[in-house]
Image (tube, rainbow, N blue to C red; front, side, top):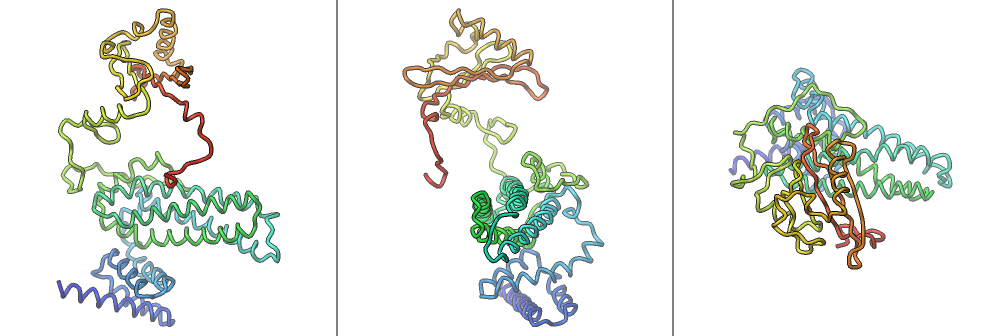
Length: 403
């Protein structure tokens, strides 16, 4: 163990020396050769770790960042000779990097606009607003890039025991979202100086995040995750969407292997496998009974199969209705309406019906939804009843952090 630590410290000193020589303007080819020798038996994760340690020791991040160019130059020839999976269009990392190149173009365009605005003796948005709004609208697409990291990549990393980088990056994503809103608001309000101030902070944060992705997150992820893991990242990406690019399809997700040693949560005996996850019958029951709505499900044969037993039901229900025809659960004078709703759901001419009324001074919203399977076949009706009195009275905003 001591020998391993000593070797790490030695590599750290070598890297520090290379960066200092790079700063001093020494021959780039000689530095590339030294760096190539250093990383022969060193992972990208350790390189990132060494760089972080140098920053922690006081070396300016800008100096460490310059090392990235040498890093890329050393690996360029090998990458051209050998096609790794992440170099194939369609691989999640390839798509993330492709998006980063598109984002960098938008950042550059915005930077030029902000520099022109700042160069004016008295900053004025006249003549700049439309261009700024256009570029900020493009930059807002970055949210899809971040959402795919948060919802597709981070969960798979966490299953491999990696929690730190995802948590930190997610916080920075939110900071960038806030900066983007502030910059856009400043443009809308015509506040030129605020546009310059907020805009420059935003562009710096976006560029820094790209650097962290390219030099820490992606190399670490490629070393840690299996092809099957990357398949899990890839599946579902299209539901979120992409930022300013369309991914290729040369790389295809491999079939997930059941024997892969991924730290999956333990499967609950008797669990019900759903489209997105699995729950035990007890969990399903608890979830449905704790929703602030009343639910009743009628199958394709018109029989009541289920109703939720919430704490505050709006309309009374009892076990006696289970198996009963839905028409028999309504007053005679409204059965013809029930029949019409069901018939239109069956034929596909309607998918939803809604009604609202006052009950004991409360405003109640009732909705019926047609239930269809993946082939479009009619499978029943879900009735959702909700007391929306308090919801109708809401004003302004209350965010999660206001709780």
